[in-house]
Length: 379
Image 1 (cartoon, rainbow, N blue to C red):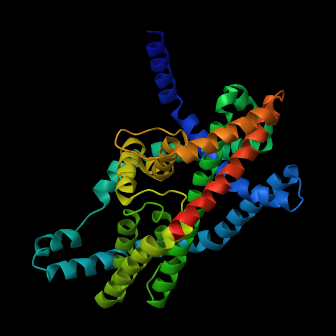
Image 2 (image 1 turned 45 degrees about the horizontal axis):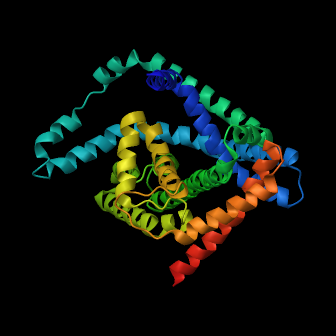
Image 3 (image 1 turned 120 degrees about the horizontal axis):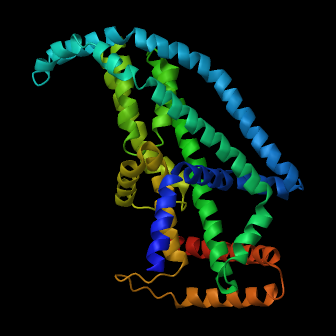
């Protein structure tokens, strides 16, 4: 009964502190993304106390530069896109009128009125503005929280290891290292693929003389964070904008974008992510559906790294699933040797020093396993 009460109280607390938990998750994502850059600077003989502000400062400068370069054009082109909306709608209606299946809906599209929608949405503008302001505040808090976590890494890690029995320290350090790899690799890979999508879309739309190319390209890059769904969200507005230059241009834009999406999913994503996620397509789609249903867009964004983390935990904790029959004797023997090495080296050490030793041993073990995996794949 006591455990039931504790679990119920924990669930109640998580529900009421969901924004705070989300800010913490975003902060940990930022830590996993930026920590490799900090460690690279440390290997260049730059102290960690200087490396962290350098990385955060560089991130801020890049964000400001991108905003200064894109936001003015983005707003102006977005305004132009709204101004051309009646023309686009008219061409879409004309095309629908020449299609037997869509002909009954052509007149409705041509005479569509936005006034009822605008009137219905007017009351929720302030609510939406307040929600946006709250999310911006939580994001800024997450950035500062990530900064403090990175600055106090050793003390926080020592406090965490002090709460865990010593015979579980190696597994804990392996889980933390793998989580950093999954989160950092996912965020960096997603930023790269989204950037490539935006650049490709901008070049394509500019070459086809499509209006509002920058606004549409930025939207395509943002939508690219959603696998399978992003292409539908981005290609539709592109096709409508390209229709102002003719149906042939619209068909070319759609065909080329679909071809690039196939190239991205088949070639770019496997090379960029590598073994970071290692999720089959069915699990990716299921994770997106579950995450989107529970938490909307934010849930869809967090779904893939969380699914990869769950799979990693099953592997790292050596959980024997009912349907598997894998001979992991060699792996368990390596785990036992590492645990004995850790016990010898950490004997009499405080939690902070023991945590550093556990991380060092786990890093060597993960590098060794990565080399073994590469040899197996080549064979």
